[in-house]
Amino acid sequence: MNGGATAAARAHSNIALVKYWGKRDATLNTPAVGSISVTLDALYTDTRVTFRSDLTDDELWLDGCRSDATRVRRVLDLVRGYAASAGHPAGGQHAVVSSTNNFPTGAGLASSASGFAALVVAATGAAGLALPARELSILARHGSGSAARSIFGGFAEMHAGTASDGSDSYAEELQGRSAWPLAVAVAITERGEKSINSTIGMVESAATSPFYPAWLDSADGDLAEMRAAIAARDFTRLGELTEYNCLKLHALMLSTRPALIYWNAATVAAMHAVRELRSGGVPAYFTIDAGPQVKVLCLPGDAEVVRQALAAVPGVHEVRMSTLGPGAYRLE
Ligand code: PMV
Image (cartoon, rainbow, N blue to C red; front, side, top):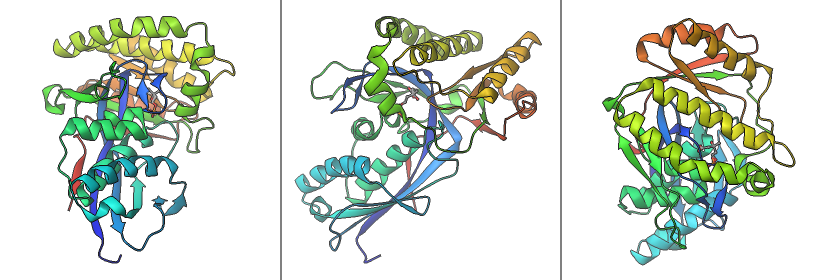
């Protein structure tokens, strides 16, 4: 460190109950549809950003390894723009970004969501900026669509927006985490990096599916129903809709050219285990993003039964239990 402007932040991962897939504008990274997520307490990224006058480029260190800084640079450029307008020296400086996840990176556990949310809070902090949460959410969206939601805790909704400059494409909190405590079990079925990241998957192939128009047309209905389920604290409705929306997304992914098959054998076995739990009277519902991990929503009193059932599934390496988490915040 050479004493440059520095700040650190923690952001938690989130999982979408109603998911987005497809981009409205790839350059602005605005999603084609809105989404609703829960933020997870147990999975987070810690990031430190230091702006320094001696650097000739931005540097990214991810879990201790030098990594490609292209996507990070894009967000830092926007932060530098704000800093320059505010007359802060960070406006003309590159940065060292060093980030650690407390979970496997790039395996469908939303490391880009927590990663870019932490980056935005740390970078704006280091640049001496105090931006409103909505602005932070928009900045995070430029890194990864799902990151816009990780600025917030509890239940968050991302708006697809219609503005051509992306100014109405941001997330906001629907309810805080204490309003409705839920538990989420995360069954890790694979520790390696997934083969196709979600951005490449959705930009290059979503529209090749004949189901894509139906996916777009049915999104607003799912969002309205999910908002109603959350407002009414109706867990059955929330769970059934979560599972339905997840399977609808994977039907879309399976029908693109080339097909996106994110599941492995243990992913499918875990889905069946959740359905068996329900047949036995335990309300639990799965959801799966662009990766092989299975996240299972349940009520806090059923968390241990759900954990045991998932741990017994052949191919499940580990089950992480989580409650709902807070929004992104500064460390120190
Ligand atoms: O924003 P990205 O590139 O991390 O894509 C997220 C895509 C899904 O996780 C599958 C859906 C979602 O809304 O989080």
